[in-house]
Structure formats: structure tokens, C-alpha cells
Length: 146
Image 1 (cartoon, one colour):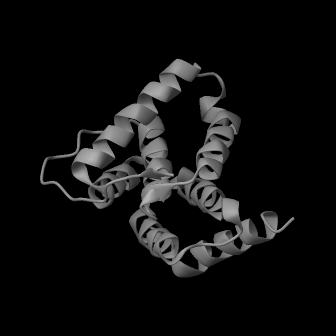
Image 2 (spheres, rainbow, N blue to C red):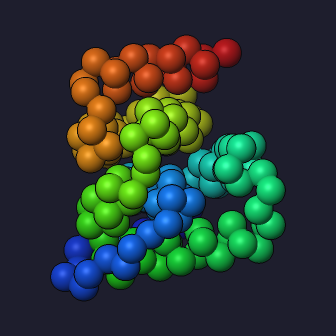
Image 3 (tube, rainbow, N blue to C red):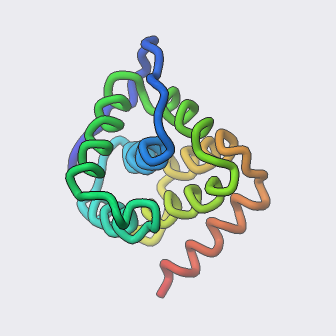
């Protein structure tokens, strides 16, 4: 179990591209409980590889982006990075990004309290209304109950 820092720093967040923003949200989600379970990491890797936007990118390119956003989260904190990333994710992708995050966090079949708080904050940052966020989490719960 790998521990991640949730500290805040005052340094400005560099502009993220869309791919990095999506990966930053995913990495931050896994850090929301203060640790990354190996199952979460494995699920996240599978999901990233299955996403259309990452299919044609090399593993090295994706890994570098993940390392960059992980470092950014460690130095700047989860909240500032989420705010920066949410502003970059195109509106049409925001529900999908939220669904991917919920899917990864449900790897153990439930949301921890810290993960629920993270999802609520993420929904707000992404501009999703509460009903839409709840619908997405409900579907992910059904998907992960099989």
C-alpha cells in the first residue's frame, strides 16, 4: 500500500493538456484515501489503456504523463491539481471522466468516506449537477456488483 501526500502548496499549477488533466484526476482520485491499493492501480491502468484517447499513445508517453501529474499532486496537493485539471477537461468529456474515476474507486465494491468526499468535490469541479453525479455513481455501482 503506497502512501500519498495530500498537502497543499502555494506554487502555481502549470497548464495541463487534456490527456494530463484526465490522468491527474484519476491519480488524485486514487490518492483521495491517502493510499493507493494495488487493485486500484491495476484497474486504473486497464481503464487508461482501454480509453479511446490513450489507445494509440505509447506506454512510455502515458507513463511519463502519469509520473508528471503524480509529482505535481505530491508538490501542489490534490485540490489545486483537481481544480486545474477540471478546467481543462472539455465539457463533453466531464461525465465520462467522472464515471472512470468512480469505476476505479469502486474496485473494492464500495466507496470509502474520503472517496465519497472526493467524488462530491470532483463533481462540483467538473460542473456536474448532483443528480447527474448520483446517476453515474449508481450505474458504476451496478456495473461493479457483477
